Length: 164
Image (cartoon, rainbow, N blue to C red; front, side, top):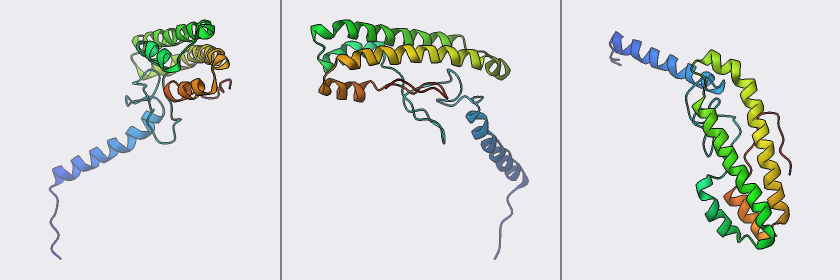
């Protein structure tokens, strides 16, 4: 068999690329990478990515609230609970925007601020879960199914369980 030798510059390039790819996964899993769903505020979105990570969703976009309200067919006796829920959705979106805008620049700063930021995110999540439960309690079974499909409760921060 007549094997061709790969030029040394290609061998070095392949080795460097392979090493970079091997490091990217562990760094991203620690929240230090820049991939979607990795780290605090680092491109979070529907369907967080990453092996072994919790699958998650964000609260509804405030711009879709009127559509969701129409899909649910909110009745007059449900308006107060809907308004409270909708306010929570807007608050969560404002919080998310503020967290992304104030994201620390360096990995060391992000690591240092992570506990405080996670606690704040937990507070927002608990508030959102409470507001959603208040709405859930006044909905009928068809409306609940729509809410679960169109606006499921996002998972909370690690170690936190949401009220059912």
